[in-house]
Amino acid sequence: MMVSTKGRYALTVMVDLARKGENGYVSLSDIAESENLSMKYLESIIAILNKGGMLRSLRGKNGGYKLSRDPKDYTINEILLLTEGTLAPVNCIMQEGVQCEKAATCSTLPLWAGLDKVIENYLKGITLEDIINGNRKKMLGEYCESCGPAE
Amino acid sequence: MMVSTKGRYALTVMVDLARKGENGYVSLSDIAESENLSMKYLESIIAILNKGGMLRSLRGKNGGYKLSRDPKDYTINEILLLTEGTLAPVNCIMQEGVQCEKAATCSTLPLWAGLDKVIENYLKGITLEDIINGNRKKMLGEYCESCGPAE
DNA sequence: CATATTCCTACTAAAAGAGTAGGATTTGTC
DNA sequence: GACAAATCCTACTCTTTTAGTAGGAATATG
Image (cartoon, rainbow over all chains, first blue to last red; front, side, top):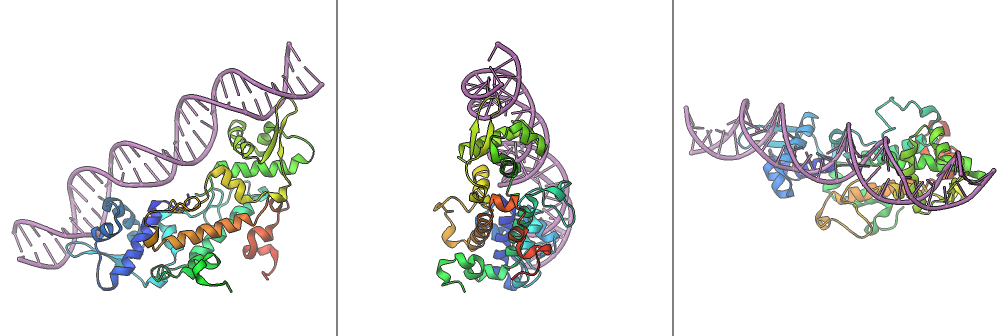
């Protein structure tokens, strides 16, 4: 499994904030309740999003969180990358530049690199806005049965 | 991480067999040595490949394993699927037909389904032969710098 | 019959995943 | 100023997965 509940819930939270946050701050208890998730667990997840600069927060009564940008300016890639740490499908694909010592002679490395790129490319192409708009064509592409013939 | 050492080593073993297995059986100790991996661990991994019908085996002296088909007839998808069990990027994407109870109203599901399809599609498009031939164009596609301009 | 091999079962240590628990701090409202 | 509702912070725990190890039985070959 490449994306754990942490990343998944983080995305759910972002979607919820995008939907409810038009005017003002949304509290975590509100989100936890409507998504039916553990508030305590969400607390630890939203902390990552907040520290990563994805949100604005306000403490105290009537406080909460809201997005710091427009939904169309968040890619799914950056949200998941922040919460998961890495989205690499294997251990041998690491951070920028760093690579396995056997890289030069490894015949399977191009496969993993290609897979990594395909994933990254897909996730960079989808924004929070696409999700709240239910843009199935963009998300499911040629695999979407209700989107008509692919061009 | 979507693919563990189990799947990675399984692929390595398959590549090694494809390279060495032209005429006759190759022993595990041979593979373990040339790939510098634990023979005991590989034993448990190759058992999965063997039971899955990917290999022919011969016990006793001079025994070993060999591919049961031509390298071009193995997709990377089936090798990894067999050893990893699933390649789904998230828990909410399950086996054929089965789906999460919230599926009907889940706004992020199309994203995960799309991601799953992109991964599956990529891995089904690459064969063992592509790897032993070092077909970088197919594996890295538009991301391959040494492959010339993408068409 | 000795040796090299696959085959089989069981075990273990470390890491990651999925939360829980408890309380400190901040801020708006009465 | 007290209270309530919220974020913020640290630490802990239980379960599952990962990555192997260990020991030996069965089976071919020379």
